[in-house]
Length: 420
Image (cartoon, rainbow, N blue to C red; front, side, top):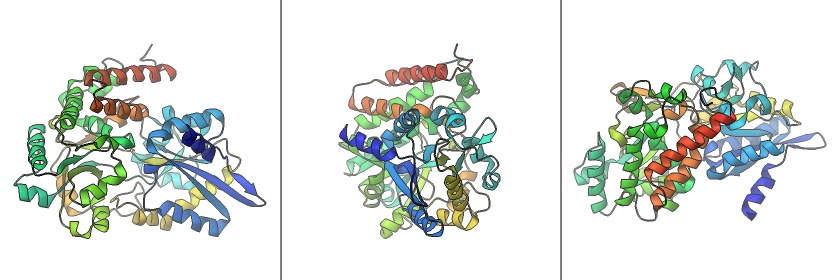
């Protein structure tokens, strides 16, 4: 409670002035900005040019979404709020009409990609600024470990399970899972959503029209059961419930874990920390539920939202305009976490031939949380449920029932006509 109170107090500043100097508070969760520190570094340069200071308040991922809603409700939210966005959840997460500065007429709004505009807009108005890549989550694997054990990347769950057993028998953690961060364990459920849609054409629409429940989606239940099986068989390692996302690169780079889930460009981060891993990293689409479709998320990353209730809206806009200058966009891209794309068409992507070739051989589809309502806003709650399932306090069926219950609650709060 004491820690949370300190965080709340730290985030409560609505910007401050000292003489002519203005300080803007920038509230974000840990994974909302690059670990490289590029955004903080650029903010210092912005201060040198303008005299406007940016004060970062960085909160653990697991607390951020609830904290944002609490601070908005109390009128004490930061000047700049970094929130996760996708085409469906902006209103549920932040109520932009009431709380966000309208950026529609800003010049930079016209330069963002059409894909990300869906995620930072509501009712035809633009409310956010994002530096999101085209986010694809792949399973990355250690080629040497695979070669030494005579195993190949799996194309279905049975193969995935078989190679994991061989890796475990060799004394290596097969797959690095990070439940302590709150969100990571949820990825397999919904990033494989295009496979559900392929096997059940129209399922996204049926879910959005409340014509079926999430618990009726048998393929999703299968994925949850498979995650539970991986945990029970020790494929996530011992005491894995305390693992964090941040520690994953070390576990993988040191050869302690043979596989983990990451986004495109991760190999650059790994090689930077562990040069011996150069040319030793492969990737494949996650095969839970026998999935072989690449999940594409048109949002899936954080966006900066200007607090409509701030006393310093002019300075917030000044910061957004500065950050979206061409040379500064390039700087964010180059100084980030190795992302190979960015949601600004004017910046040339860095996709390698390996990715281009792999994508050309696989189907693609939209991930479930970006196409089905009331999934993303409860992401962290689902993470808690999955952790409970790993610990033995919830069943897969109960996890699904909880998802449906929260969907109904959110739909009714937002007066969705399909939930009467």
